[in-house]
Image (cartoon, rainbow, N blue to C red; front, top):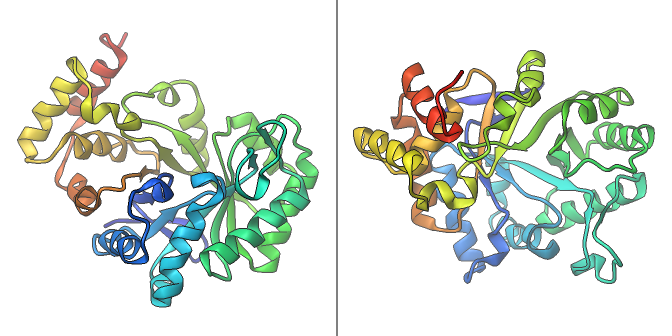
Length: 296
């Protein structure tokens, strides 16, 4: 599987295994989590996406139990995690309102908790999960720079940021932001034309795509887009997921889809996307259906 350079000395796999629902599985045993991780690694999927808030602040612990049981796994992977969302759950039980916190104190606390939960001494990439309308970019930028300097974090990035949010934070930092994780799929195509993808493509930033299957809708939906996905899937003897993911990989920007599933069989089939080769007309055949009309 292709490797994508994120920063000096740090690469991601072309596909990322997303652990948003890891703690929601009926089976969160060490054995089962270990099997999921190994199923991804066996395909060359070495990058794993986490967040402190996932599972009500429990998903990192679930993953960490498996890593602590088999320490050699950590050396085979890159861990991405996120912080800044606060809800009334877990270690933030009692929060009066859902909010974002990009203060130095909160970021440091979150990173320290993530390191402990996952049983590691370094996070490969830390993301600010959501733009904070109350962000002091000087304080946030300095906190992120200090974490990289300390060695607790190898690189930093953001999630769900618009170009102006990115520029504001980057203006107060010494270290570069290395990625933005945004919603991008055949169900959410606006970044292709609203300037988000163009901004990152222009500057050579890696774009991580969350919900690349539209929250599962691209797998179960009906209509013209479903019909076209099925037609291409039949050609390559794969499922819709592989085609929908290939649509993202075919773009010249550095898009790394974050594939989230708890189904071990589906995890084992994630690399089927590499069987699919879309030409320009295939790509627009799908884009047209997602758009609901011909391009202008």
